Image (tube, rainbow, N blue to C red; front, side):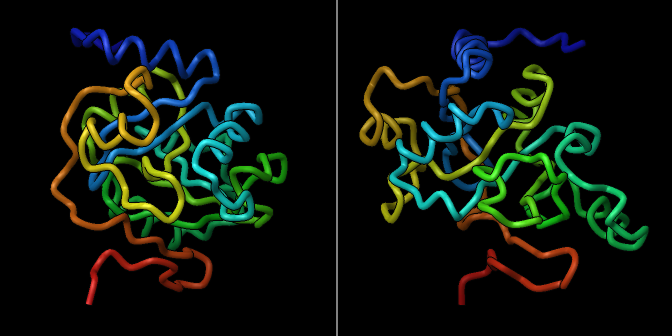
Length: 193
């Protein structure tokens, strides 16, 4: 059980997640938008809020590998692949791994893979711990617009009553690297040339 004294914004965000609402929170590089990954209504609302193509899918961020087990098909990972993943987590690398077949199409984008990460951001990790499972993660913006790096940016996009977890983003300048653990392909690199 967590023994920390959490802020009003933290408790408010947890309550909103349980009510299948969307929240904003600080992550490693930008503010993110998140929701309950088990609610298709929340996922559809998030897609609509961002004006996002539903075929893109979402990342799930978690506090631990155990939290990801209901969403990934661990038996399709080799021992070597799992060791590679766990050697860099918690960290700022997202992996595409085999998804459980029952996972929502709104998370996978229709793929048989799901993007997952154990976050290295302590406040985001606390959020996942307290919520009891991963949360959906996508940049806090309207698709095609710059990602929010401050609370005020989130408010400009989504209004001043939008639930925001107060805290600072991490020190990364770009979104996380995304690696397909099956093929080894880099889908998105965090190093800009």
